[in-house]
Image (cartoon, rainbow, N blue to C red; front, side, top):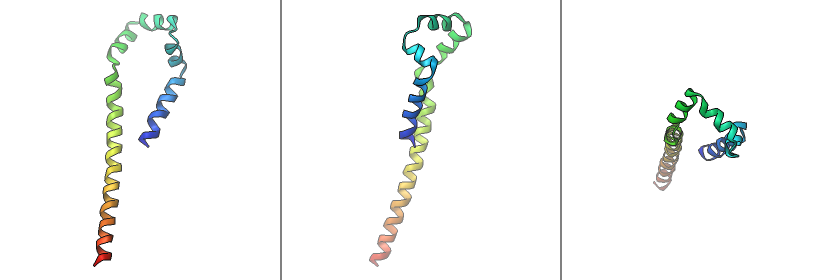
Length: 86
């Protein structure tokens, strides 16, 4: 799930009109966004680490779930193998 979710989020985000205008270097949009005090404060708080930390935490949690499932499957396989060898 994590492998397919991240590219989907990126593709979806890049298709948004605001993202397209920012990527194109639309000077009018950038000027409008920086005129408002609230927007300037938002940009100051919106750092890459602030945006990435929740995504990394979610990916780590999903990875742990998958690893636990793999562990359970391997332990079950080992147990069945030992039972057959007795």
